[in-house]
Image (cartoon, rainbow, N blue to C red; front, side, top):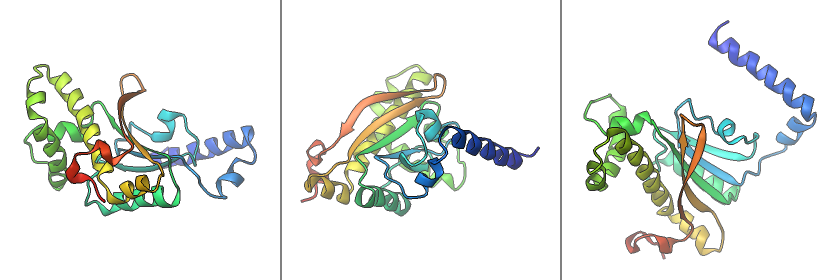
Length: 209
C-alpha cells in the first residue's frame, strides 16, 4: 500500500467513525465555520493542530509556515489573519512554536540551505535581538529551547503590530494574542503566559492612532 493509499484509507475510516458517533456531523460542517481561534503554527508534520489539541474540524482556523513566523510583509499570512479577525471574528490568536523546530535550529547556524535562507533571516533577526541572553546559556539544548520560546514571543509582538489588529482593539473587539510551545517529547502544549490584547503593551513606535 502506498503512502497515498494509506491516507485515503485513513480518511474512509475516519469518516466512518465520525458518522457512527454523530451521523449529522458532516451536514453541520458543510453549513459553514465559526472558529473562535486562529492558530499560527509551524509546518512541521509532527504538529498536526487538531490532533494535538483534540479539536474537531471547524473549531480552529489555521495558518502554518516554517517556524511559525509572523512576517509583517507576508501577504499570505496577512490575508489569513485579516479574514480571521474581520470575517470570522475569532476571539483568540495562538502563535504556537515547538521544541526541536528545524527552522529555528537552522537559524542558529551558518550553513546555507538554499532558497529557505531568505526566510531564515527573519528568525536570525530574533536571535540577534536576544543574542546576549542566548549566548549566556552554555547548554546548547537549553539555548535552543529558549530561542524557540523567544521566537514565539517575538511573533506575538509582530502580530500585535499589525494595523488592522489594533483597529479591532480600538473598536472594542478581540482578539487576544497568545504564545504557546508544543513539546514533541511529551505531546503537551506549554503556555508561555505571554499574551497581548492591547496596543498599550507595545512600544510607542508600533502603536497606530
